[in-house]
Amino acid sequence: MDLGIRGRCALVGGASSGLGLAVAEELAAEGVDLALVARRRDLIHDVASGIAATHGVRVFPIVADLADPAGARAAAESALRELGSVDILINNTGGPAAGPFETHDDDAWLRTFNLLLQSALTLTRTVLPGMKARMWGRIINITSIAVKQPVDGLILSNSMRAAVTGFARTLANEVAATGVTVNSVMPGYTRTDRLVTLATGIADRDGGDVADAYARWEREIPMQRLGEPREFAALVAFLASDRASYITGTSVPVDGGWIRSLL
Ligand code: NAD
Image (spheres, helix red, strand yellow):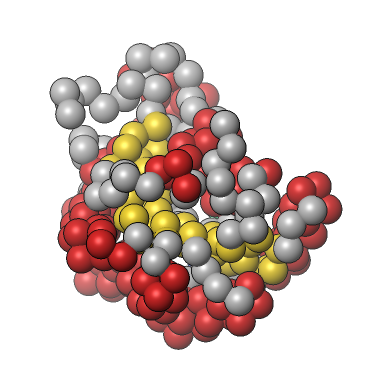
């Protein structure tokens, strides 16, 4: 299927590893030029040159902390400057700390706001006017299965993903008549560094080992296996495509069946 986005330009957050990297690779394979944002200079430069060499697209590495409002704004402005326009925005960073309610003070909640919601607001605010002016845009938020079924022990993530989803669902209608779609994709347990961090935390807390945490997740997933970042990125690329022109305001899981609800 030709996704119809060759020559489009995308800004991808959290792109040096995991889901963001997989999305960047999938978009590059479709001929999309990229601005890739992450905090580690060497890593994001290596990733950018690797993707450019493999797929023959323009790829600009941008070093920024998206949890910092000034950093997020500067990153979006750099992307606009380097690419000329941003047609596709992938709102993504790392996840917040794990742990129950009593372990998080106000600073932890504020950090989570900055990491997940502020970053999406700031990047969107900077690139949306151009999308509306060109009457074409795709804004895709990487959220979590926690939006539909909260995950025990992840109160910061469970709460702030809901806020991101409320923002996205509302914005979708505000811009729907301008050719800009706004959707969210909810990853289930997918094989990235984030899961290593979560599994290590569970092993430390419960005294088991990391393999036990993975085995427990696999038992909860109807497909009995973790997802691969590539499987997640395939849906994101479709939602970013010209073919997805009538899909907006949705939250779609890629979770091997983990969410148990009907809808
Ligand atoms: P990851 O930790 O493996 O990768 C996150 C990427 O974002 C890294 O490249 C990291 O350097 C970058 N990053 C982190 N904080 C940043 C910041 N402040 N500014 C710029 N870049 C930053 O995570 P992942 O598994 O790829 O997950 C991506 C998102 O999806 C996270 O929010 C995560 O919580 C969520 N999620 C992941 C899973 C999963 O199973 N992997 C499940 C549900 C939700």
